[in-house]
Amino acid sequence: MKGDTLVGIHAVEEWLDAEPPRISALLVGPGANDRVRRLIDRARERGISVRAIARADLERLAGQRNSQGVAAEVRPFPYAQLEACSGDTVLIVDGVTDPQNFGAILRSAAFFKVGAVVVPMDRSAPVSPVVERTAAGAAARVPIVQAPSLVAAVESLKARGYRIVASIVGGHTHLAEADLSGPVALVVGSEGQGIRPSIRRLADQRVALPSDGLESLNVASFTSVLLYAAAAANHRPSVGGSAVRPRAGPGFVGGSADEFEED
Image (cartoon, one colour):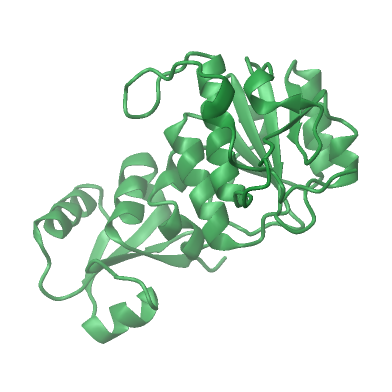
């Protein structure tokens, strides 16, 4: 099966740490800096081929983004199995097709140590090089499940004791007052169509973040707020190491989940 090409230091570095066999070759442009040279040394230590690439070819692979002087030929993205989902919090992302939004969501999921991210095979951006670059390596640090049936995946999580909390406009509970203690599966939807009705019907709780008339947050920004609230509910340290403390009231007001469809 044909693989992809990742461009940029963060994405390459994370896979060298997480799963070196995914990288089939490291491509290095001219004038490598110290950080790229360290990547070269680590790749060679792991038996990965290192090849020079012309600057023009590297920039073509990078498109409009900075190549940072390095790329990697990689095997297809290794999706996780639903059975591997664990932890207090699982994030379900329904219908987010924009790769940059999806990449930003994955970055937040990794920062808040989400146990897994579950996406449907339909109505969802795949984990592409653009997603991985936007996620700044986070796609290597959080299990991502591509579910053939999102309904079946949600039902499986419910059977394992996860409460399903859906973020919906007009949700019955303000996010600041919601019980997000684990095990919980948080569901976010696209900015256009929101969470599909079949998933909304399976929700144990519906939450919202009223905007008081202000402009709504996009799905990636709202997901960060939602994951912060869940981390606070579980007193879980962030990736940075400092503890996340609960906070209610005005601190959660001013954004909106208006991008999620109301029943």
